[in-house]
Image (tube, rainbow, N blue to C red):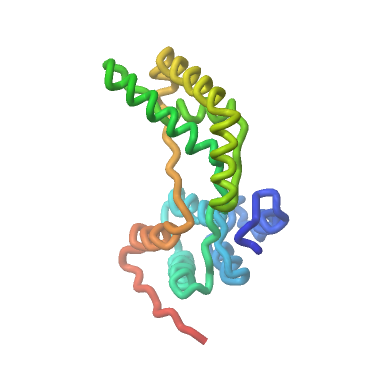
Length: 208
């Protein structure tokens, strides 16, 4: 199923090799055409639509209409937004649980403020991933980690906290990631239409 594709899947490569404009980016009209043809809007396609709208000085009426068509297709189910991932890394929740407890303890007993995201990312980059696609698999990974990896998790979180305490202002100009889930795609497209085409009148979606 397309919903279970990964970046290495040929399906994603096909999107990457689609028709491109002279500006070197995929046009909104072409993205919508591809989504309507396949019935799916991938995270990469969603991100490209947002990037084009963020960087464009002004969108054309054709681009407004394409966005409206996409929103209508998402509403009717003609196009399905592919979730950003169909699996979880159980190690993420284990590291966050450990990091939150440790950070809360430090901040409650001192005037230091720690960056939880930096601490978790540092520790996760030094720990083995524990992926699961089902609740049963996730429970198995949690039990495995409790029995075999709890000490290592605590050690890496401690190292991350020590590093953060030593470098609290490391690259302060960095911008935090802003994640969007597949469930937010419809709201994103609606917001794009309102922001870039305040006077554009959406056309009723016609069912054949």
